[in-house]
Image 1: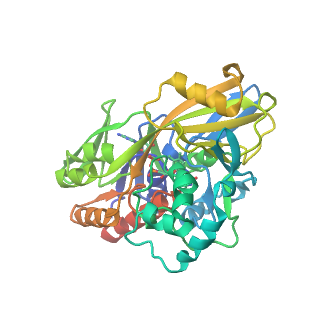
Image 2: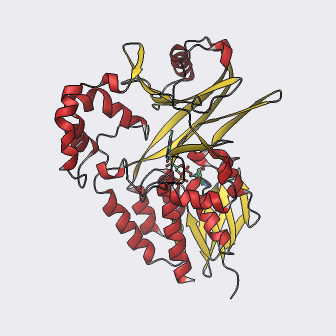
Length: 399
Ligand SMILES: Cc1cc2nc3c(=O)[nH]c(=O)nc-3n(C[C@H](O)[C@H](O)[C@H](O)COP(=O)(O)OP(=O)(O)OC[C@H]3O[C@@H](n4cnc5c(N)ncnc54)[C@H](O)[C@@H]3O)c2cc1C
């Protein structure tokens, strides 16, 4: 049998994990990524000054012992020894100009009255708001917990399905509860992309897809063509919908039904001796211009500190940097390095599982077309890898 060829569009963790599985099975794998580096929301930013090298996360930042499929890939790639713990610095709330712990923002009486509901209430068909306001109390939810939840996908989560927000999965006991990697998450992305069996094309987005005599042909903006027996879509729903119009208008329309949010992220690097803010994992500031500020203080560095601010859309640069310098308590001249990034996150609503089931039904009737991403089983890194694994198994079954 001829070696199967696969083209994957999108080089975030969904596309990378799919590329890993396909290449491991001996398939000729090409991965096309729009940006100049792979990783998507799983990409760290790198900063080098003289001989000092520093990374900080511009999207995802934490992995857990329950990320079993991710761990499987990490182990197969031989980089399990680069897993490192995250320092226990607090996730904090900024209220009335003061940084405080999440717990100090809670009314303990209301919490104690409500929390036993966790044993009776089911998450099915509940929104985040309807479920969690019963678990922590209406006021605690409104004043504190909802802001913490909004920070997770950088958007209002009141209407998210409660069962897709925090999922419990079996954990591995031999792995740290939460961790990152010596070189940041990007080091995992880079390791997968460096596999010699995967051909990685970066910096040239896919522009069209066609089907020519049973083969998919992906054309990138620089006019190059990549043909393959099987095609994997691993990109956000909006560009996936646009690209699919050429080969499957039904699926394109299905993808267009999904809502999503753009997150405008700004990362800054400051020399350690130029900032007095106490170490924090993150700052969440209710009703502010940003959803969260995530810091690199969880992996302290000798020289630098790094902070990623995930802003609500529509702010100009002046307003962003005013807020950044206010929060960090420094003036602009102390910022040594800046990076900007746009992350795209799905906006899930009740009924999402039905949407995913009907998408799978549509996919089942199309030959050699597969889809992965953070809008199938959930948004966490492990949800993306699990979806890729399921799609890979489906691909293997029809080979
Ligand atoms: C701020 C933030 C913090 C998060 N924190 C965590 C966390 O701590 N832990 C956790 O488990 N999860 C976290 N998540 C969620 C998780 O990071 C994402 O859901 C996951 O990384 C998404 O991966 P993906 O590959 O599905 O999508 P993406 O990462 O969005 O990748 C899609 C890729 O497709 C590319 N692309 C788009 N159009 C084209 C085109 N035409 N041609 C080629 N390529 C194209 C994009 O450039 C992108 O690289 C976080 C997300 C964000 C945004």
